Image (cartoon, rainbow, N blue to C red; front, side, top):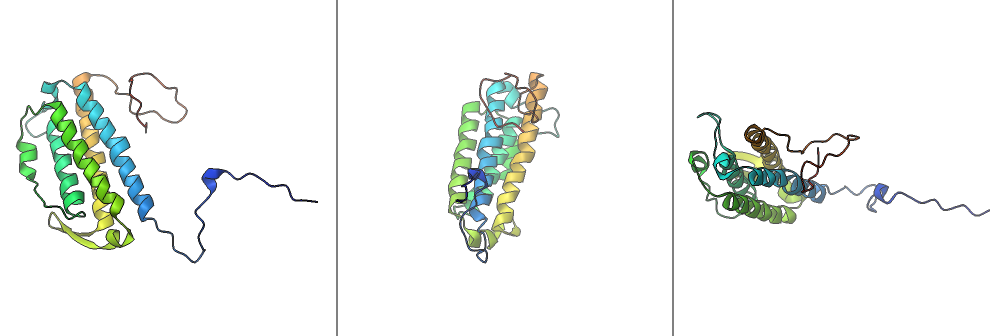
Length: 198
């Protein structure tokens, strides 16, 4: 009797490799870093900028806090210094103090274009990194660290400050932005632009 073929779930397939061959995680890690930066954090930051007035982009809750505009400048400077310059070898032109001194108004379209441009350039660098690059040591902003540490610093840094920008936007708008939905919860049409939810 012939054995009946069973269908395999295509998502459960792993790349063909010998059991003794090490799995190269570098492309997977870089793809996830890019996804987090572009689809998750950048998308939410841009939505926040679009929903704030030009004045609110530069509003500070108090003198010890930063505005959303300052945080966007800071993220652009950080991703440029750590990924584009630090890992990609481009000149480091960052002036970190100016990111926080700026009072605006730099228009939303300029801020959004700056951040998009720097993230896009960083993703081009990430696309070129291999396992050797991720294990190599770099000196970035006076830190001695490996390439993978620099990548994860930038992703974590984006998560931290995108959360602050979201919070500032909620303070100014006084409404839920619709970014968070737990599995099983019903969708609410709070926004017209679809974003990945967390």
